Image 1 (tube, rainbow, N blue to C red):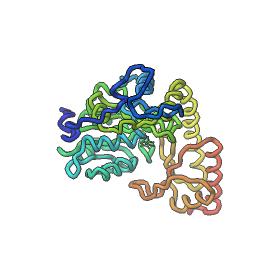
Image 2: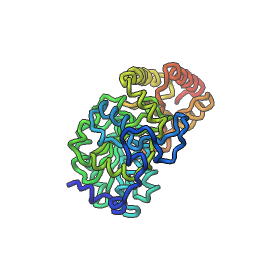
Image 3: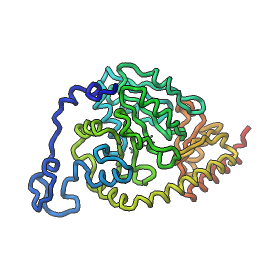
Image 4: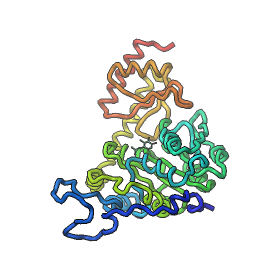
Amino acid sequence: MFDLDRITRENIRNLKPYSSARSEFTGDAAVFLDANENPFNTECNRYPDPLQRVIKGQIAALRHVRPGQIFLGNGSDEPIDLLYRAFCEPGKSNAVAMDPTYGMYEVAAGINGVEYRKVLLSDAFTLDVDQLLAATDAATRLLFVCSPNNPTGNTLPHTDLQRLVAGFEGIVVIDEAYNDFSEEPSMLAELDRWPNLVVLQTFSKAWGLAGIRLGMAFASEDIVSVLTKIKYPYNINILTQRMVHERLLHPEKVQDVIGTLVSERRRMAGVWKETGCIEEVFPSQANFLLVKTQDANKLYNYLVGQGIIVRNRNNVSLCKGCLRLTIGTPEENDRITAALKAYSEANPQK
Ligand SMILES: *Cc1c(COP(=O)(O)O)cnc(C)c1O
């Protein structure tokens, strides 16, 4: 049985959170003399809403969840870090994750003094659920899976994710940063079913707002309460809240961008395979393609010389020879295609 109190660190359970001026009074008033703000208007002279009620209402309506099931952070990195701080005892607890995957789970474990256990994916980047569960023990508090996975691009079957959440008594974090580009359903629809599920999404990818830093963690009201208790009081600034508010007035617009990027991904998967230097393009449900070449460092350096920066994944588990290419605009994609062809002509493959 999942018991949130059992896995919450004692100091966090007993913590009395900071109470900000703006969270103690929440109604309408004409005169605010409670927070030592500057009264003269600069557009930003007031503190932001610490509970981000307006945008949480919009996100709740869009994603069909309750506002209390949403935690907002300074990028997804914030909820990742807070999950360690709330639920992992430094030097005692551990976290389990698949390998290769997004690097921040391991960095955040390191920062928090938490052992990080990796379970290698298969050569086809599939996950063995039983192997992942077998790597957990009584001290495992967090289990991270990423689908579509970064840097491999593939999704994990929904039934596997369900088996993980059902089979583990700690918190299962499913990172859906790229779900907007995928045909797989989100696990969000099952939030009410699993008390130990945390789903991460972000405004950094499909929404095109990486620069404003807004990440979302969806979970039970109880888990969200713990994260809210330990966050910085004003963690989401006023400019970010305003911009997301505006963007969420027209959520349908994002579908056009997603449609373009997905069709470009399909186009490039075919085109890049024919450039002469790409041996394999791995199937992807994200806004990038992992490609295999004979000498990843050489091709990477060549592209840098052409003013094109890609992500070199040569030293990542199972990714020897691989580069991760983000899907750009059609013009950018044509530019890298031309560079790949020129490289192939200068470096004929054996
Ligand atoms: C890009 C990415 C994120 C988003 O991180 P932010 O901090 O929200 O920008 C989260 N998870 C994965 C796997 C990613 O690749």
